[in-house]
Length: 543
Image (cartoon, rainbow, N blue to C red):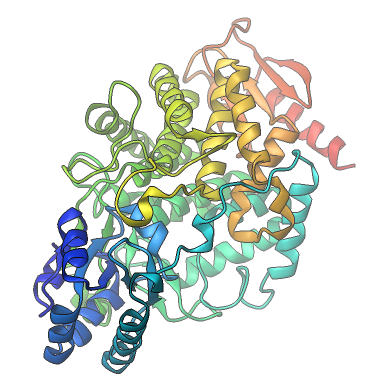
């Protein structure tokens, strides 16, 4: 149990059989509090609401209170999340949903407790329900179509904030994969958004990006720094440098990488997050230099470390930044030695309570491994093992489940997350091209087709899905080269197309590279010729 939970007056239980059995035997509903170490509002609710004696007594007497860290238990998070954290969720002893809310101050909590008590007293277990996302067993299947990319492109235009950058209204999140989609297709929108993120979410003093801004103009940032956001933005700024050549994007990527490799480095891999601290961030800069930095959660999560490895290798590929490569290699060794089992199952983190084989972990670790294959020329065997395990154990029909279909409450119901399916399909496509294995491509295509019937209803937040659909519809640029570290290999990595594939140690003639664009092959002998060939073909396509 985390420190803020211990300091409240609520008698918290861990998620597990004991809590559910207690609720069933006592005929009481459960309170499930979803929290995160980096969540400022979670700490506020602990201090204001759960520390109020009468509310705590009511919860302790009339409910069975449980506390779950959402970073450590993503399957619970994804089934009971009320739209953000904290999530305050009331359940039947079977784990079905009675009611839920986000942050609740004392008055709001009293009202909700009264409402839940009335529902429970009048209906009992029949007051519970199963969320709609867990009721539908089938996905919106449809054939893969070029229109998917076009529909997302239209969404960019419709949702773009021309005044402030970014897409949509408040709150504003730095949608890294959406920016990358736009970099290739609507570059001015991407640049405008990157500049806003750089101005408003980047911490110029300590480095790193804040998680999001509460207001549409990117003001009022929430000052937690979470590894997944920071890793994704390192990759995005490095990618933006490749497309634009803007030095400020390269410097932002490098200084953000330094935040990962210092503040968020736990000695073996990348730590999960750094807490917000209004008092610390309210200090003048000269005083911050002498103050203790906000606390870091040292836990190394597999999926977020996969993102960080991919980002740092991308930065190295774009700029030759050797320190990023070195830390990526160290984190890869940690994953390989500690979190990846011999059969390819990835543990979410190194701990007794960790689950293994979760789709998001498998997908992002596989993505890191396929990036390592392109940049370092290593890890093919491990990548195949991780991919094969996922296909064998998480594939259900043509799409993938987020994890095993067992556990308490709603954990026994299948969930097919669109974003994780798209991420795994994208990594599988990379592996198919790197290993010349059409089976991986077929599985990737079927996973994307499993959701294609809803493509016209998707928004810009799932641009990664449209990216993968586009790469499956029109084969991405591939460059086959010889030795890792050769001039042609390094030039191929630096090409301004982040959706390409670089295949090192290929069967090409010494001193040459084979470029495949739209099914046509070109042989080049110098980095300049490589760039000219790719640029000329892209200009022809645009015309």
